[in-house]
Amino acid sequence: MSGVDNIEIEQGADWEVAVIWADDATGDPVDVTGYSAEWVARQFDGTLILALADGDGIDVGDTDGALTIYQPAAVTGAISDDIAGTYNLFATSPAGVVTKLLRGTVVVPARVDPAP
Image (cartoon, rainbow, N blue to C red):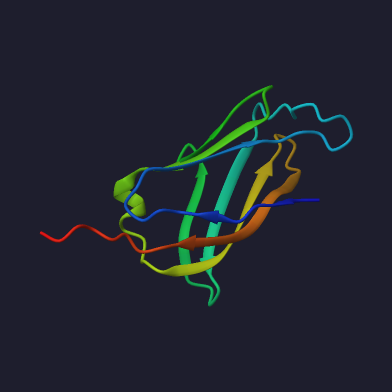
């Protein structure tokens, strides 16, 4: 069963989320060596907010169960402001088994810059 975590992406700021995938029964980290990952966020009307994959916004660890999702300020600054939607994080094993790790809502509040 996937976890639920609601997130906020600050427009125009570096953004990073670290996830540790642990075995439900033992609590031990899952060995994610060789896994691929995909994180997709869409507005409630289905419009794409951001789509990331391993090597392109997601770093997949190894025996530590770590997946790190990140984007630099230049990318988050280009996301439309004051939007909301939902996201999913999936991991795919080397054998092709797909697991939904996380889901939730995502909000991108507008950046307020100081007056010139």
